[in-house]
Image (tube, rainbow, N blue to C red; front, top):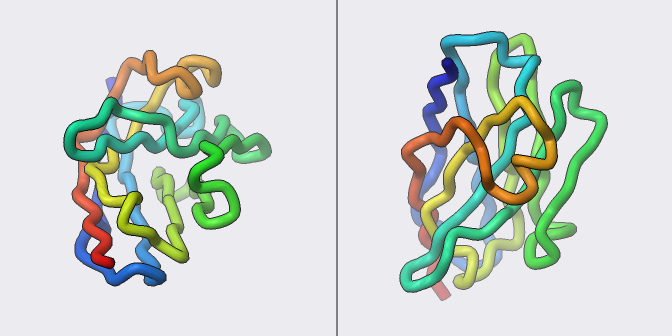
Length: 123
């Protein structure tokens, strides 16, 4: 079992930056691939970023490539999402996810989800 708790969401002006954190507990963090998803009002949940167990493989949605960076610290049992040059269309609830298989992270069919943290970007 893995429990995930996101933090770091909030309000920011367009062009600003935020760093989201996801703290994991309950199992061996280094065994899990991790990812971030988001859901904007009136839209489906979408993939944002993924990172594999040892952190040597990363993938990003085209909409955030070059602006967002996913990273992990297997000592602190935490995954991060550094977001820069934020746009109003980045406004969404951001969810942390974990799974034992990397392909599951890419398609969102994961075993564990956090409860989300809200990011609001004003124009």
